[in-house]
Amino acid sequence: MRYALLIYDDSEVRDRTPVEERRRITAAVLEVLERPNVTGWLRLQDVESATTVRRAQGRSLLTDGPFVDSKDFLGGFVEVEAENLDGALAMAEELQQLRPWGAIEVRPVREEPGIGA
Image 1 (cartoon, rainbow, N blue to C red):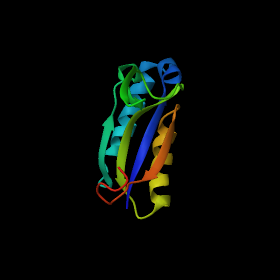
Image 2 (cartoon, helix red, strand yellow):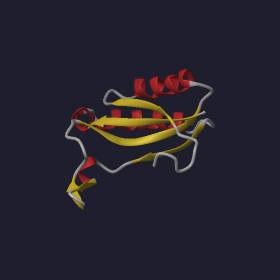
Image 3 (cartoon, rainbow, N blue to C red):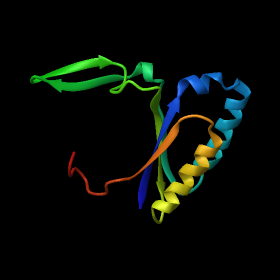
Image 4 (cartoon, helix red, strand yellow):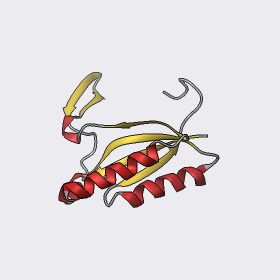
């Protein structure tokens, strides 16, 4: 089964972490991401680069920034193959232990194309 590990960051905590420590964390995370059950991953630009599109009163409304106002923001995602939720959670826990900030949300990937889009 495929799972998405949605990586949330807290930029305040990340920015207080010394550069050498962030480099060490990044190297350790990259080692995990090179495993064969990791089928894809993306890192996103900082939240300030986001534009949110909404629909209001029949018109599109563009807003600079993320949809929600929160100190945590979606920083990227990892796609993994796991036998079950426990396997995906184990990967998320391992990644989170390497990072002293943010959170990781684990969600199954919908396998049916275009349904519910």
